[in-house]
Image (cartoon, rainbow, N blue to C red):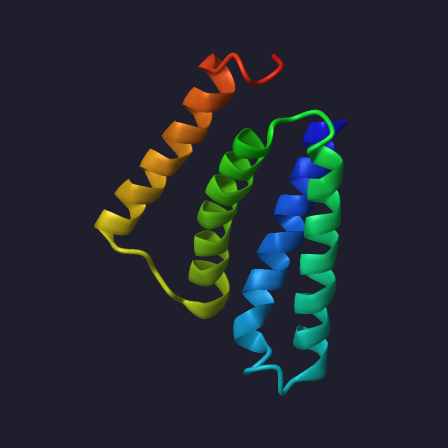
Amino acid sequence: MAYMYLALAIVAEVAATSALKASAEFTRWVPSLIVVAGYGIAFYCLTLVLRTIPLGITYAIWSGVGIVLVAAVGALLYRQMPDWPAIIGMSLIVAGVLVIHLFSSTVSH
């Protein structure tokens, strides 16, 4: 159940972060509401995740996956294409999350 909440937190955070650009510095109401609601949902779900998954592991997964998904949304919606160094860096982040998840004894397998 914790990983379901973590996935929901990631999706909500990606939606909120992606809506920041569309909010035009909080001058547009609908994107601004998405930002506020998305971050609220994300942080609430994170509190539920922290019942069972350690803080550092939770944050590593949340931020690592979120970085990659926000970059993908930026490329699709805003045509902000990452260059090769950015792609390599994000690949290393994903590799780090996988190493933590697959090999760390702090994560319940």
